[in-house]
Amino acid sequence: MGETTVTTLDGRQGPATTPAADEHRGQGGAGGMLSRLRTPRRPRLWFEILLIAVSYWTYSLIRNAVPEQKAQALRNADWIWSLEHHLGIAVEQSVNHAVNSVTWLIVGMNYYYATLHFVITLGVLVWLFRRHPGRYAATRLVLFATTAVALVGYYFFPLAPPRLMNTSSGGHFIDTVAVHQTWGSMASGNLKNMSNQYAAMPSMHIGWSLWCGLTIFALASVPWVRVLGLLYPAVTLMVIVSTANHFWLDAVGGMLCLAFGFLVARLWYGALPYALPRIVGQQTPMLPMKA
Image (tube, rainbow, N blue to C red; front, side):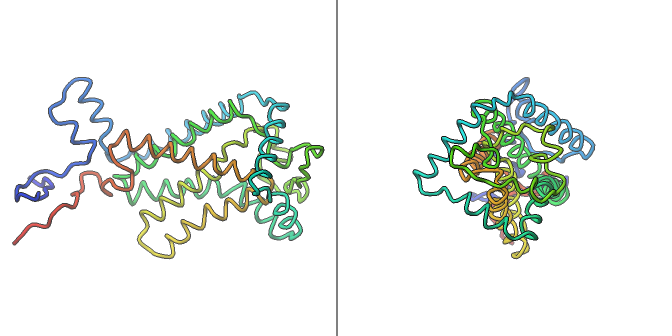
């Protein structure tokens, strides 16, 4: 009674399920438990707050515990800079100097870099929790897997950001936070000792902002909001280059991490997060019933 049903092509009716939930039928024991874990369910607020807080604390702890390996990080930066020159995309220094000449713009970008990375990501998580509970867990898994695999990059490929490159290597970048004395960034200034300065590859500013942008574009119903979703990672890319916090290729690394995150969610839930029902237990559209 009250069970959601769908009509199949041969005219029979049955309960609506998600791809991962289908595996639960006929299974018991460990297999059944695994299937239940892979079935989307309504998130609990207290659990999500605790999970996100503990996860970010763990991520920060591991990221900052990775040995800085300054010498290797500087050598890797020289190699990235040389590679970009070979590819014809080494324009970060020109962008950095050009934007730095417009004080109001670069100051705004410094604050953007320090704050929106967290604010927008948390805002999208809250929006998913409230408006798309059936897709929340899978989309959150994408974010978590993306962030987790980034730690591998920080450990195996320490990389100095452009602003910390040796000038003898041909990099003459401006540390815009230090020059303009803006607050809030752990990349420069008084807070720099609280964060690993040589963990620039991959860029999680890009990984997270692209996650936000794709999620908003895929799930928002208002056209101009969807456009803003696409603009957000594009503007973020401009910001991380203008402030000399990342190379273009760091952004590519962030995109690859995000692709890995989507793959993990696809394998775990049996579908991409945006293809799951919006509400837990919601009918999956198939064929309309005939009167």
